[in-house]
Amino acid sequence: MSLRKRQRSASSSRLAAFCSPPSPPPPSSTSSSPDPLTFPNADVFLRLRLDPSSPDDVDVRPDTDCHLSAASPGTFLDLHVSSASLLRSRYFAALLSDRWPTAASGRLSLAVVAPPSCPRPFDAHIEVLRLLHTLDFAGAIRSPGDALDLLPVALLLLFDACIEACIRFLEAVPWSEDEEARVIDLARLLPADEAADLLARVSPPPVAAGPSSAAGVVARSPSEAMLHGLIHSAIHGHPVHAATKAFVAMLLKDYPSRDCVHKVLDEAFQSRLDTVKELMGKHASPDFRVAVDSDEREAIQRLNLQSAVLNVKHLYWLIERMVDLRVAYNAVTLWSDQAALATDLQKLLNDADMWRNMTPGLPMLVTRCTLRLTNSVITGETLVPRQVRMMLVKSWLPVLNVCRDIVQPMHFQKSTNCQELEEAFLQIISTLPVPEAQELLQQCLGFSTRNVDDCPHLVAAFKTWFRRAGRAPLGGEN
Image (cartoon, rainbow, N blue to C red; front, side, top):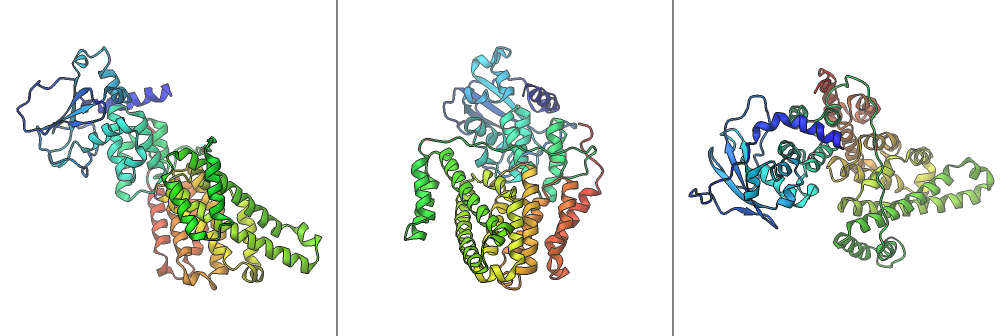
């Protein structure tokens, strides 16, 4: 971690021109500046000063869509901030140390560089200062634009937690073409290893490198027993299912300990998933087909498949809760690692008489589960590593292709789920490095079998890939 901080310090040296040595503002100002914006536990006076002259060697895009009133060149904004919160920034930690004698006065100054045409030059700085106090990155970073606006200021202030949150969000979600250009511009300000995670998506790698991933580990909490019982009642024996599920969903959403809710939902999801895998494995097992006579086998298969449908319904309800509460990380990771279950489902779907007579709704339910999890990834509600995103598509794309070829005549003509899942998979593929995207896109040609004019999503995906693959390698030097 110390090495990464030293790397950031070196990368941030090019941003040093944004800051001036701390010079306290006059004790009493006659400017028309409004009353200082005050944060909780404020004990330090901070002035943001607008400097309209930007160094030629620094290209940082200012935030242009925040909450403060317009400011013209030469104006300033006063704030009351908490020194304890400022210490989360290594830049402010240095200013507040004994190395800066003006820190003892409780007055700091920070220059904000922006072109004269920028209507709201202070807003990104205000938001980063707010994050120094709250650490509410999930609330502040909800789109690539948010991350791209905050990242330059976080780099300037050496606010490592904010830098990592911005990079993690950007690495996990799709970008527009304009956002892609901004990412490339900002990547040169990052350490080489962190820039590589972003640049791998937009150009062929100069040197082949394998992606890495990490699995989350969730700790148990003592109060999960009650929530576990509520979830069990909601998805199992209560006579009024819809009302009970709605009530339990409200309790989960309002429960104060998100870690406890996360743990209980993960446990319930794992249990239901294991049950579905066991039931589908029994249906696909050749030993089972030999061990019993045909009549008994058909009765047991019907019971197993109907039980699988019921458990997939439970899975979908759990997935909805986890996505809504933004705790679906483990669910997406587990679902992406179900190549064996996907293979068993393909075997079932290829036995058209079996599933149509016994469980006609199973393909649609599985597709809805996959679609809900995939949508949570492409919107940034669930941030998972690159390898998980790749395996999510790789495991379930064959099931989608079988559904298109076999199930579509009976079900999918009346539903948009198949089309939506196609588009969601293509969006996931757009977040992958060029070589991995190439491999998966070639497996999506079946999306064009309806009509060439009826698959603009596939056309756009290939155009994006060819644009990126044709670009000269980036990120070889930093």
